[in-house]
Image 1 (cartoon, one colour):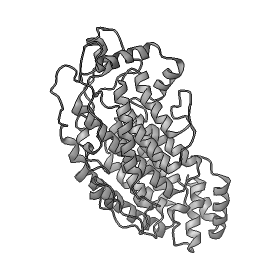
Image 2 (cartoon, rainbow, N blue to C red; image 1 turned 30 degrees about the horizontal axis):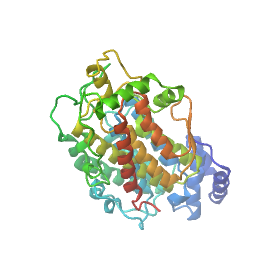
Image 3 (cartoon, one colour; image 1 turned 45 degrees about the vertical axis):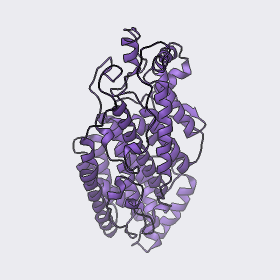
Image 4 (spheres, rainbow, N blue to C red; image 1 turned 60 degrees about the horizontal axis):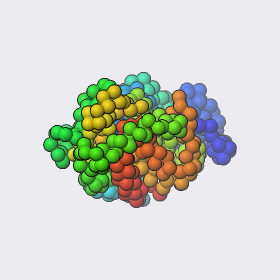
Length: 452
């Protein structure tokens, strides 16, 4: 966990004096973070031991811990990026609900998508928001990820129980009651609303034939999540609400737009400089990584910690990010499997006759148009700029590679898109169209009146 600022320590230490240090010492002895212990003491102290501090007076630790736990299971399970985006949306929904007050608009009143079918319990102003977060995820995680609860989530659930058991019985009982109802509502929504939509094929724009996607070397794996584009969007009415223009028609003819783009990919790969190659590696985010949406979520978590953000701000930011990632991926996957365009490596090998040509980054096993990286990165950059400000930052997300410096979230998104051309796995049109679609999805999510 990020070290507390001097402001946090002084504010929390003063509160501990109001309730006595003995409870804090005992809680630390069972492995709880001292900053969280002290912050909870703030709430108990202000109401004579029976109340709870509002989320905007608590540190973001509860949200950031569960973000790290979700990303841990993503890495361990090799989770596909669209599923990771759905996980991040779920994470944000739970955090937002745990931090909501009675004056905040319910999620079911927002957007035009599946959020409108999310029936959550009413907020309880007397429940400790951080404890509600732990109680909700302790119940939800083993049910939702029954086949993926490896050490990362098992440890997270056990740690949540340790933190809950260290609370006074009345505080713990109230949080468990609220958190468990919240978890059950979110799980039922997933089973009844989200899951059925993932079982319908995306209608094709063209029949299979010349120019359509085929499994790519070197692994020639089967297509990833071909039905995902039929998933329910959460804010958009449906995935077709925000779509790019059609891609250029397939052509092998010299001078055609399709061939020109393939020739650009070959030239770009042949002439890569060191910085372009580093960008391609930095944004690759392949299997067994946190994946592209996890990359942006980790950036968000780092910046929330750097800002000493409160729990309410973290909940709002992570919900907005999760919604943007989910809807941008569903929109992108609809486009990919609707247009079903072949990847550059297939065109270069089979049409241009360069049978031994391979891109420096392994081509993912799904169609070309549009770029998932471009779409979700633009969506993420849009909402993070709204939530955290237009900031310069250093991205150290990929621990085994050198850090990269960016003047803004938008600049990072543009490099993420360009990195797919540098890596030889996307045509330029796919990147540029993806940036436009992702920015529009992000704008619609950013306009939602979430926690103030």
